Amino acid sequence: MTKIKVLVADDHRIVAEGLRSLLEPTFELVAIVENGRELVAAAKELKPDVIIVDIAMPLLNGIDAVSRIRSAGIQAKIIFLTMHPEANYARRALATGASAYVLKHSASSELLFAIRQALAGRYFITPTVAAKIGHTRVPEEVSLNALDELTARQREVLQLLAEGFSAKKVASVLSISPRTVEYHKYRMMEALNLHKSAELIQFAVQHGLVV
Image 1: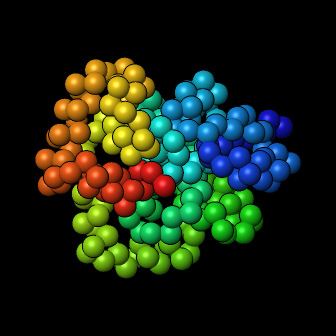
Image 2: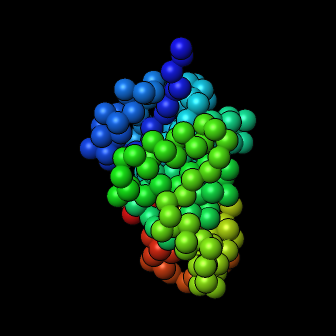
Image 3: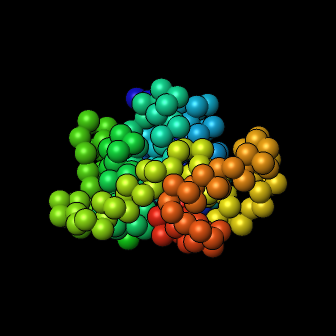
């Protein structure tokens, strides 16, 4: 019987190796990648059945990476495995079409259960997070909408800037000009009503684009 193919995306090597030990007895672990751009490329090449992905990853966060994967027509079951218990993160993650949202401090059995649920066409959310989603308050809704003011390209630029990349380096990574990077930066500050670069970086941190 052919094993279910699983792709793991997590930039913490200890976590990734722990997942390897957990998954390999039952599943075929096709790859472990360490940033969102590698995840998109691996998903297209390897066509996994299940993708286990962290939210906070270098170069491209997990949520935007999964959105790209979905845009490419890849229908793998998505399991977000993250440290973020906040409802706004869960809502954004699940909006990509993910089947599960599991916290990293949960028992290993919870992740395995989430995978089985996903493969059966069902959904699973760590109970403490599920309770928060059911009682989301206005500040969380505002936080979510603020991030949605930005385009996918603007979020890419913002994440890289917040990770400490210069405008020239961001331009190189995204294959655009430094002037275009500065244009996106200006438009983001305008859309978010921010006035200093430091405020823009703080926004990125507060909204989980960087850790």
